[in-house]
Length: 305
Length: 261
Image 1 (cartoon, helix red, strand yellow):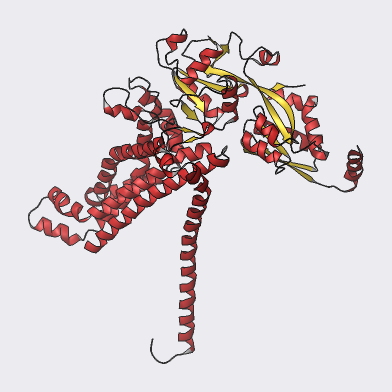
Image 2: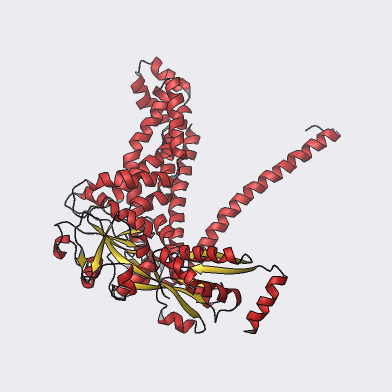
């Protein structure tokens, strides 16, 4: 701004500050909404924290609202295990997709593959759940282990693995693409092969972005509800291995934190409802931890990049 | 009487519309919606809105006067009767709860105590009740469901707990789909949801049919109730009277429930 203030200049400045205020307003509204939802959930959950106690709520393995038993540990274990399973199954696929799209695929292949992966993100979760229920559950049931009914952590992890694929693949791809071209050219010029360049230069340079992609996928997995309800069996039990093979723990039925709320909230009153809100608070905190680590990873990546 | 006469005098003069709010059991909800539609077709001035929430919500809403009519798909508990002494209970229909298995099981009869032991997890193999040597997959409804509450009360005698290993599905429909597609599974469902994709089991030798339930032979039958904050009056009374009339009860039996008149 110069010293002379013409009418046009003043007008422009006014518009500028007005726009600034409007944008600030929208930002504040979003923050307020998050705060209000958080506070509301906490307020509704308060009787549960008071009457049941945080420790019993978090470590109790029995959830029987009819008997006034409210322990979330089995559900926390369910959510964590199913997310772990989804990451183990989905991560190699998703990162493979990202590397292929960013580094290997010719333009025309990319033009086909990328929209298909994005389309995957647009499929409603209930459709994934339906697919899991009629295709995956009967398939998993074929595994001959006592007590295996098909419904359980493995089916749920498989469904989730496909659901988090687009999230991880697209964020990781952006991270890989934002590695400066000079890095690759420098590496190639030094005589490294394409594979060596990818492994030693490009992927390490994009590491924090790729980690953030994984953490975002984790958050997505923790929050998934309806598809989980349809395939996981919803039994409130500590997942356990049915045979000496520890992997059979994934054939165990379980319930996720999200599923607990969705399945029971219709009927809940009093302390039961408060305990479901407390489930929401636990989920909120878990997802906050996951998102905060994603932010921290992204930030550290930016500082270095 | 005066009120009825007054209403009859007022109605033709002003095309007055009145609203009845109905809240509660998701088992009664579809039936209530049909009964509301049929009533509104002949009484266009009355608007009946039906929403779910579950039996417990139906009882507390009606008891506290938050709605005109509450719905419950189980017996009203003694504690609830004491809490809301002026609440009036109208049994509009009865509903049997059938024990069903996957068609591959081949067990056609169970005693009530065998059913109980299967659902507590004490009996875990079909061979213990005359079936194939296969593990039993127990399918149940979620905590708070009226169907589950009625089953717990009548079969589990209010004290035995349904095994934590049971596959839980949040609706009668989802239970039927799960049992139809899961070998060696067993579940309990409302009579209205029985179809040929699942095999019905006789309990104590009595087949789960409407005839057996009406005659009082079939042991697992629950009432479907409409609850009013006090003695029903005006439009609410007229609607409840319609439900108990032959026309209303015909809708009840068309939907697979047992009429009470």
